[in-house]
Image (tube, rainbow, N blue to C red; front, side, top):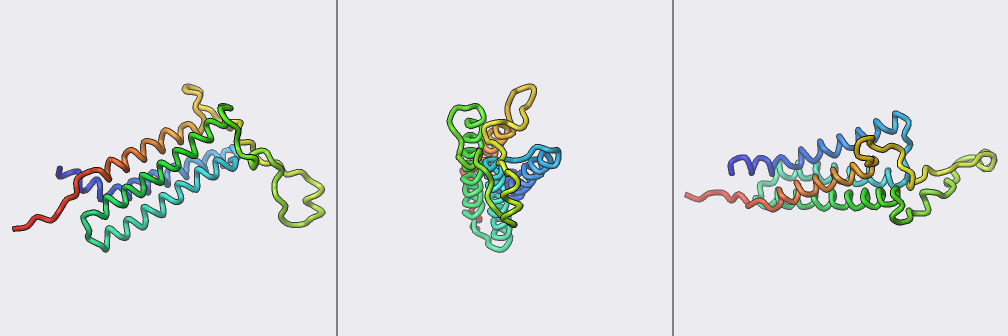
Length: 171
């Protein structure tokens, strides 16, 4: 049990690093020319939320010594990653044509700026139902891999939340 308490206490740091890595990977694909659709961007929002929870948890754990706080922070991170898994599964299902995607994935973009310039060109949103990239081995898209990773992060978070609380020992 000596390794469990530090692992749970440091889970917000590990979750922060995992979320930052996922965002870095998404931005690397974008820099390589794979434009994100609106559901791709929604998946990124979840990781930004997890980063916020992790940073808040790190600060609270540093300044507030409560034996139940690591459990609460891990549970909040688990909920965030579970929400991310839901968005990713929905997006993967749209790509595999299991269900229709939102209208925003195929609609003409919104107006911003000069009216004359906006009328002279057509702005088309990136479709959500076409995977920009698929793993050649598994045929999973980025949304599919994100679903697997999000489920794993949620499982680790809930495992950390379910660990027994370390109470201070009395003499």
